Length: 575
Image (tube, rainbow, N blue to C red; front, side):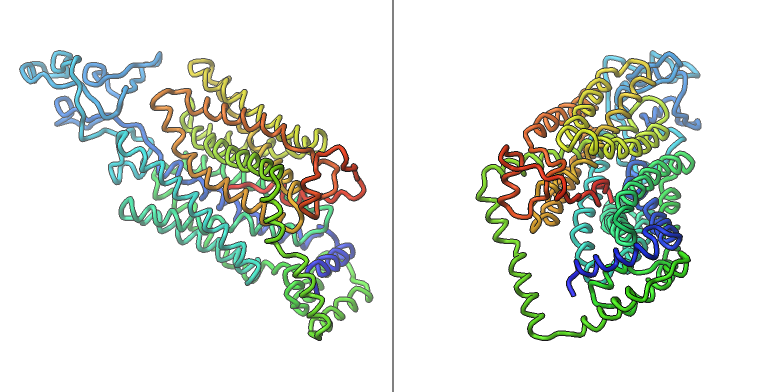
């Protein structure tokens, strides 16, 4: 039995047991809960590998005293300035004024004459602010020469996402959605605990990579399980709600980091709870669609009957008989059926279509633009999340707000897709991000509420763009390579995301530079997107020839034949 037939029959069954009844609602909520921890683990390095406030330890003034980050004599010993509230900020946390040895200890307290303001020197010991404890203190990852090590933690995380995304998609098709989903969740918890137990920087990197591998499978598999358990009219809703859970999970990370200032305790808090999801082995059912596709009709029938009982619905005798007949057909391996399957497989061969794509200059140009837009989306999306901790004000609150703004961002994408079409929705989202990022970058000394508002609007725009690009890309791909094509774009975006942790470092050279860069590349991507064909209310291209014809005036608009590919349009790239 072909997989499409199984899916069709299950949709017919769902019409009787309910597309989103009590059974599906309970199980959908269960699979959403691990997504909260996957979201938190996906960005935990922002705080565990964050840079706390620190300054040079001034031995001349603090040799016999308990050092405090803020004191009244810092101006005479360290280059820096005070704000209107009297808070001292060093120009460089690793630089101090040279000591004037000839006048030391002629006064009981630190005196300006003890130091030479014209001469500076590097220091080797530091005093940290008491509000935050990260891997910087544990392994002395201070000063600019170590900044790349902290950024490289994020790059390692995204490398793990690439590995896990490629691996678990295949394993889920081979061994089942539930089993691999549980494995990823438990593996994420164990490797997260490994991060907290890391004994040096290198071991921390290894566990961060493994943790990202596990994390990468939680969201996509939760998405697949959720989509496959509900009826056609509820699939888009499950996609949106799952993204809402992801955004809330990211925001909860900011709250947890605020309450738990020690990076090891924070990592334990994010990693121990996922271990309890092992009970899902007995609570959450396997995907019925996957079971039907694997011809495991007995297990599928048991789940269907259980769902009907919980939803207080009854299956018709005709449908139960049809399900029984499928079980009999699955055992029918006669030569005629095998021959039909071989013919279908030949018709679906991928490589001839790939060759056709590479022979079309129009498609190559179109897909190169899409690759660039995917990469821009990833760099800006993650870059804004990372850069949120550099905004003025409470960095934990800023981080939570930047994550929560994804919720209206996904909602905006859903509205724009339906009202404006794909091209204008994508271009408008990117241009909104470009303008607000650039404005936020220049307003470094303005009102804090205005800076944060512009920053959040930029994150809303790039979130909307990310949601739109999934649908838009799928609708420009021919059927035979659609899944693989979107996968290639998504993987390329993850490679682009590896650069995101390094972008905030540009602020040490020119403070507005990160946001100006985000704005510039978003502007270019938004303008390039206008060169792409509109696909709204167009029939999905089944062949390469139809894909080439998209946007041509001779291609007839066919609303009735339009098949939406929006099941995955709100899937986030971090998972």
